[in-house]
Length: 79
Image (cartoon, rainbow, N blue to C red):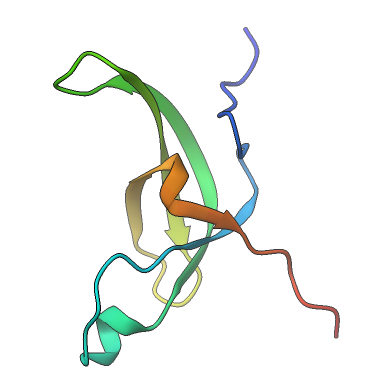
């Protein structure tokens, strides 16, 4: 069976989470960068299917799950 791939991203892609709130707290205002480790297809309460990505944060190593359209591609910058 092939690995599930979202509409926009695939496992292993480096992404940045779009900011959804305005905050003066640095923990919430700094962008989250990470790599996608898993993609799941789930339905919401309106029975619409969406792709949810689990990302592993680069700075902290924590994992979190986000809907795919809240993530944007973040290729590594050349050194």
